[in-house]
Image (cartoon, rainbow, N blue to C red; front, side, top):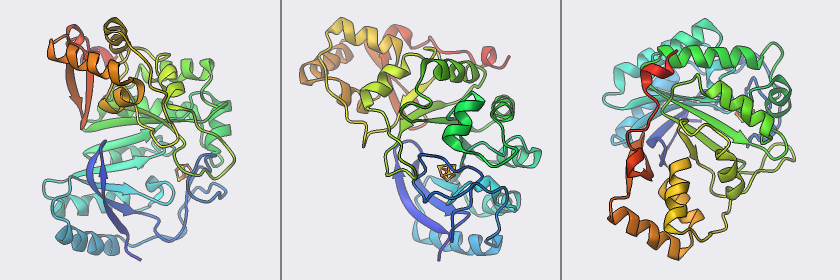
Length: 317
Ligand code: SF4
């Protein structure tokens, strides 16, 4: 079985070739309720380990077949930072990747391990998950292996965000009745305010979950996004299950809504009815609305807000 999959066309990360660091079986230090893989008790170490040489041979071959990709993504049937030769693998990828970016999709559990922390600093892009900020909700939703705790995870993400020079993304997946409460969002918000990053992608369950849990609708995610500080770069990503009900927005409603939370074209298509989309277009043509790009995603906001961003230096307190 090849360790490489794709290319996958992702709006968030571009065209990506994936490397599966646990190709034959699920190996994860979490057993998330929403996992799209089969439920399996969390473990702390990989027991089925693919040699680095095998991955590099597969990757070289895939790169000759797909020379025009943007990103090489380290992922796994499980957690990629559990792969014991990650540092060596990244060093070898760096020698053959050319102008492509390297990216890892991690659940953040092992970021408090100094070896993992320093290895991830070497990647061009890092996406870290943070589904909860309190121990109780974290244990319920992510069901971690023994010894993993949310305080260490948040501390290590905050430290990482202050020393990392690449693009850092945070992802939160919301599950109905678990991490969508006001208390949990307030705790997440507090943690996120100390994490400078490119984007905070918020989503919900899009595929059949390992356990019987439910996602949120798009409108619920949209409402929930307003409970985060307006300076945080929140981006709603879920579409499939999160069907929206389009509503009517006046010119004023549109400006007020964009003032609270910049929206993407997908958000606008999901939230605005046809007349409201026309009003949005008018405001854009009149220059009252403008756009900014954040790592492949275009956001619309009132023109007067364009400079109203969190200054990077102020974030690094
Ligand atoms: S971290 Fe990812 S692979 Fe592991 S259990 Fe959670 S969703 Fe599944």
